[in-house]
Image 1 (cartoon, helix red, strand yellow):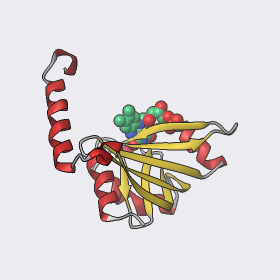
Image 2 (tube, rainbow, N blue to C red):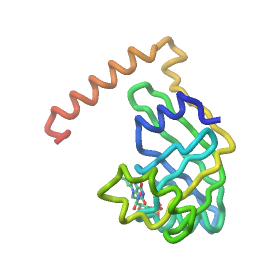
Image 3 (cartoon, rainbow, N blue to C red):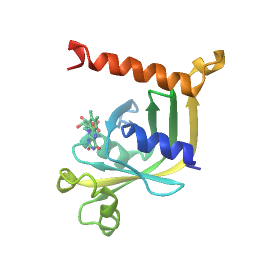
Image 4 (cartoon, rainbow, N blue to C red):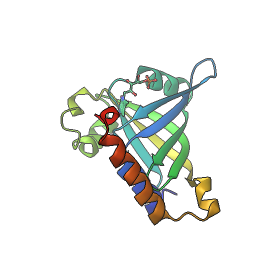
Length: 155
Ligand SMILES: Cc1cc2nc3c(=O)[nH]c(=O)nc-3n(C[C@H](O)[C@H](O)[C@H](O)COP(=O)(O)O)c2cc1C
């Protein structure tokens, strides 16, 4: 389900946008940087200060995650069912080693959200439909962000 290409998009791009459903049925999207691909069907992130996401999952476990590779103009969309493991839960302790790499934040992780993925797909920009290649796009967008960072607005 989570292929090697999807894993690369998740791990290299680091920030996932997590969509949940609020109690009144509205969509809610928020960014999470502490994402870990656990295996081919599960991905997890930490709740450091995500009160609404945690609340929404408790009421409705349906979630969708999106990771965007801004250089290659591709994305990974994962749909699934989330569960929340609070600090003190045996499941929390099992997952903790995966999050140790965020050493300065790990002590603030109030819980972990584990998403059982039911659908996974790679999305690509329409720019590919008109002949662009991954190598061209990578070079073009790397140049774009490098130029941006060297201007005063990028400081
Ligand atoms: C780039 C970025 C990465 C973030 N990563 C996390 C994270 O891994 N865990 C977390 O709890 N909050 C993270 N946050 C902060 C939450 O997104 C933020 O506190 C937000 O208000 C939570 O909203 P929610 O309760 O609707 O999820 C991150 C924010 C940004 C901008």
